[in-house]
Image 1 (cartoon, rainbow, N blue to C red):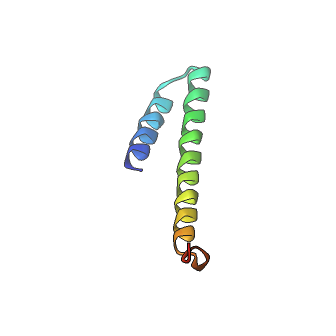
Image 2: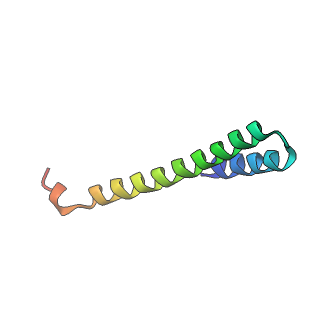
Length: 60
């Protein structure tokens, strides 16, 4: 997750320095993608954790 934060901050700096509309859209879309990936990773980690500790799975 540290890398995601660093990349996001770098993209934010680029966003501040560019006036080109297409670049700004691409940078913003990339930032949105990073946030979505972080959210999905967090959800999957929770799902894995829940599955590991599920009493239904202990007998397998």
